[in-house]
Image 1: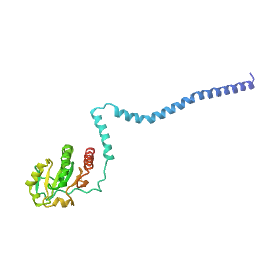
Image 2: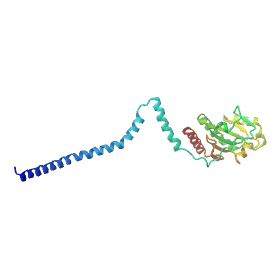
Image 3: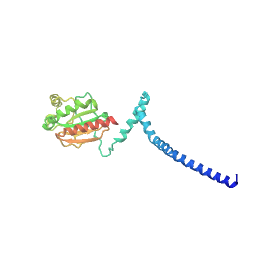
Image 4: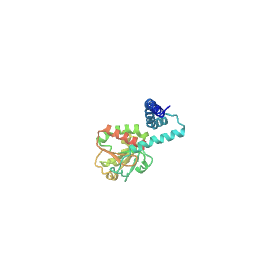
Length: 234
């Protein structure tokens, strides 16, 4: 075979090899792309699959504790409230008598509770109208963290008599504690000027809500529920 024919044969063989390679490359290329796509999908879905698996898998008690702790951390941050705009509730002061409680009541002893401070006097018709609602709230929420304290601040001299107040408390079927503020010490500490008036104090001792007079009972109850829920979350 002449050198010219040999080189021509080599050239043809080389061209054939290139043609075969191109055909193979065209056949393989879609599979390469498919492999890359599958790899990308796997990388994207792997974390989600891990989280889903962690939340659906049966856990041992210790794992349950760890999962619960992760879940409970979120609401605290989500519902954290800036309380710098609210004032601390003044401590009860100058109290001259106690009803429905075996010991003197102090707000500092009620930390962790939601406290409804209710200024009233038993001859005030507007105050009398609010009592059924207070009794209802006490029955519904006292075992869930609500404390109601009726602050009896007298308008007339007869209302300073603790026996008269006890009779009124019995007749109105009041079960929550009532304290006598005969000298207006707590009244003045709160800067109050009205019968009746409600102050809602949260579980950290901040005044979060105030209402003057009758009415808006649904709004007040919703605020009670909201503050009780805050205590559960935190």
